Length: 187
Length: 289
Length: 138
Image (cartoon, rainbow over all chains, first blue to last red; front, side, top):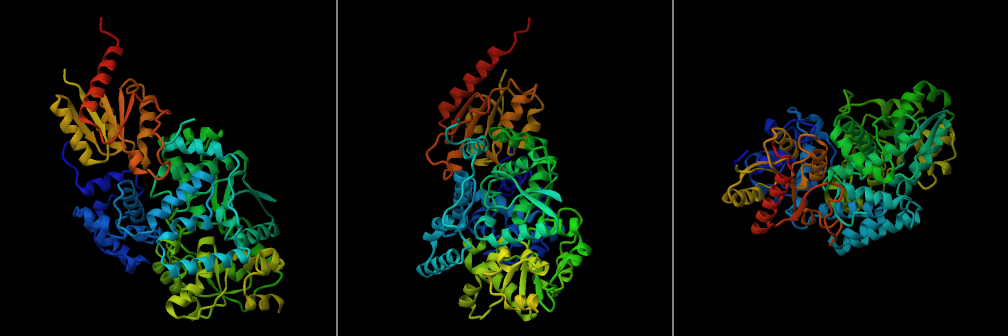
């Protein structure tokens, strides 16, 4: 218990409660990469990321967009012959990078996750149009116009209400959240 | 009428109102009473896990605990992401007493307690198992004859695997579409991801993922793509025009919830299914023919 | 007798830093890097003090673990010092608000980074208080 920990051990520790097998069992077969529907948009394939974690290439792993490009479709997880929950590992990397503010610059994923959680903690519900405003600054002008057209179209088509809803027992709900996340005034 | 604790989820109040309408109409027509649980909250979709998984389980557990109070046995979600979150939260809390204890400590603040007694199910599963294909066939007033449908399962209804069920080549959606008189197509991409929230966080990747799904459906001559999840439905339908701009394609294929298609076959008026807003001439032809 | 301190924290750099400070001051320090192994190590019953992180593994696990320890008849009396960086780690959620471990009966809470002298002061005070609480052998 006294030896200094490597990055791979840090990740293994963060995955202590994973429902799959430890990543040390990875065979490097590449089934995950061959399965992943988003692999061509990743800096490194899922197989490579597991290999890099095992080689303790901390900076390279964290600086990649791979784990924030995972859409949580779990196709790799159900196909992995070593029984590793690879999608869960991607969540662990996301969490690691949020807690340590060590993700690649320019990604929308971390902002989106934070905005989403914040919105739910404030209202008890999620509501797409409000979420949009939080990540819009990251968009280019052309994307902005496009997004506005899509959103307006949805409202006009009656697909979206103008205002988000809130749950009734919001105060209880927020106290409940604070029992899990011990931040803010405890009431 | 069998009663169910119904959890619509946030999308069904906004982007997927048509799913909400059609899910409730079809359930009623099939003798399933969906009783919406009171004061439910967001299930967190996929966004809590990168921040705090314990919080994710707690928020989902609140909905399950509210459902337990109704005395009903089945927790039904029409959204695949909500279904997956509820299913696994329920299962994990049962497996891990420490986790359940901690979550219940938080639930005390809303005078709730979760025992893990709900049977968590997706709406399509309830319709298939509790009504059954035989009974559905009997009730079809307007079989959707000649309507070629690509059955799109998506991800979270299938994965991660819950038990020993078929996740690579499921057939139940095809069977359901056959039962309502339609022609289900062999659709190789049926379990391929639609991009989900990447549509916001990595637009380029998601549009390519949507393009692949649209292309196969159109190449196979589908008249409509059928979905079981609001997120899939929105990505495939709303973002079609963006796919066309990005890739220079001219895709124009209707995307409908399985409940909308079922409702039409059951003879429920289109406007009560939220179908009036969808350009589905072929589907209407099939119904009125 | 030298006091034995258990540290449960997922950050190896932080553990190494704190260990160096405490060992220089003459304490015995063991470390575990996830809550499960940490709790298992505590079962040995040989520790006089626990230094506990909050954000580990799935989330704010330190709070759950502290609650579990306070319910455990063998470990209930052990002093616990929470050392957390939670405000930095998920600062966006409740910006500027204080950390409150009010739901857990822990002995002290300090926020990272920890000033060495303050740490040694707290550790020695907690150990002393705990020693005084122990029933004296006749």
